[in-house]
Amino acid sequence: MDRRALLTGSVAVGASALTSGLAPGRASASTGLTALHEAMAARIARGELVGIVYLVAHGGAVHVDTIGRKSLDSDEPIRRGTPFRIASLTKPIIGAATMMLVEDRKLALDEPVDRLLPELANRRVLTRLDGPLDQTVPATRPITVEDLLTFRMGYGLILDPFEPDDYPIIAAAKNLRLTMAEPYPPSPHEPDEWIRRFGTLPLMAQPGERWQYNAGSLVLSVLIARASGKSLPDFLRERVFRPLGMRRTGFSVSARDAARLPDLYQSNPETGQLELSSWFPPHELTQPPAFPSGASGLMSTIDDYLAFSQLLRNRGVHHGRRLLSAESVRLLTTNHLTPQQAAGGGFVLNGRGWGYCMAVSVTPDEVSQPGRYGWEGGFGTVWFTDPNRDLTAIALTQSLNFLFNGGAAEFQRLAARV
Image (cartoon, rainbow, N blue to C red; front, side):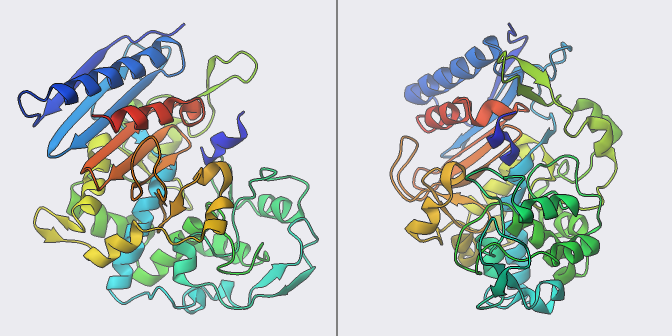
């Protein structure tokens, strides 16, 4: 398995393009959409993907395209309403939910998390990342809410080398069954037990010092529940999903939707051919998880995720109703990292900065000028919004290698030309 997939001859059997709102005579847009369709269809024809549904929204026009099928052993086509495991596209939603609680004054960005997470008070920090767990120094300050949002809490994935088993801190987290990296099998612990166990570990770095992936959103899963007095699924349903009309987004699915979930695939490292993954089989997703993961636990559809992305694009307003302040949206979608911290993000950030639970481009690249925000999910899901061009693009697949074989990069590059 490709180590990077933790962050998460077939032919197309069906293809359809559903377009709404495209103005007559938009020849350049039509040419761009054709190039994008042909590129994604070619990847399915080469056996790199089984199916994909993607969306490009630009200047009021929304184009949705579906290509391929839900599994290699089925003729059932991918559809616009097909549910997907969205993996780390969960994180931006968790960031927005946290900001709702900040606006409710149930949290403050600069407050220590100790008030609601006493398990994380009086932190100690490893003197050496690969050292014994008892060789520590006191943390110079508490972890704050903003540390969690910016992934600078002092704990997260080790990227180089990637999650080394011989590091005591990695072995300890695995023994505690915290699911800090691999999304499957999920943690069996309910939130209170999860945070109790996590609190027995030292930090890897001083709070605020270093960007490290994933752990911040896991801790936010517990913090949101305690601050709101509701379970994380209930809070998201009440404050995010229902107001936005995201009726098919959640941590579990109905038996009907479970049957519609596409199979999850990864490439065999020796043959390069797609093979069925054992991660998150559909029948396991009909029951609510013990630990609802704010890092990677949600399932959703293309239109549901568009509704969330449009909330940010509209600076917190949905159909005339304000759900987030413009200032909260600005904080979510603005880079908060120093250049050194961003560089430490390695292949995960890939030259980008980080807002609150999502990436933000800080230099011009082949997709856009600085200011583009969004994220990717390890199961082959991609979203970005370029506010400078009023353009949003979302692609949902269930191929783990989509992010790392050039597919996601090609999608973003071509979508930006529409």
